[in-house]
Image (tube, rainbow, N blue to C red; front, side, top):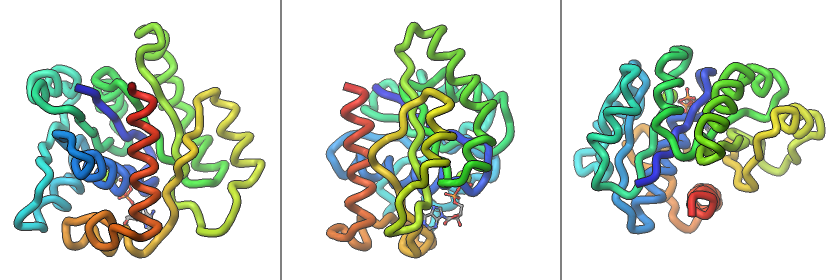
Length: 210
Ligand code: ADP
Ligand code: MG
């Protein structure tokens, strides 16, 4: 079992969008996947509930016992994806403890990158404690299509010495559009660019976890 925690204390960075899509992409690729909603607001649970024949199992664990609970709940699955909560440092610490891979979605703006400093510090401490067993990376989220990520964004990210994934998630109306139906772009337009970028993200993380 591998645990991927999608974390960023900032709301609106795309955690729930990425966590739901990543979980579904891994599942469509043949894995057994559990999605853990650690946000007390329950966005991922709301998302899942809209769809009657929801193929993804979503459980809420919004207490700082995620590391213990995930071990108990998820022994039988291939992947656990944790949708992170905004604020709540204790939940973040517990999700980091549970994780094999911390994925930090950031919008391509220096302000959003600077706002991850505390999280990055927690992640780095955990990487040290685990002797590098924990992996972590940024993924650019809600990138504007057709624009390059500017040098100032790359510089701000590079300052943290965590890698930036090659895969990135673009700002597209299809993401909130499919959320309303409890589905993903993988179902609504499996041959489209959005589905391709989601699959690329899943593949890159899987490869790093191998
Ligand atoms: P978080 O979980 O970090 O708060 P969400 O995934 O809920 O972030 O995204 C916040 C808002 O932005 C939601 O309304 C969501 O639909 C929208 N959003 C997130 N990612 C994208 C994207 N790639 N393209 C378009 N809208 C997005
Ligand atoms: Mg969310």
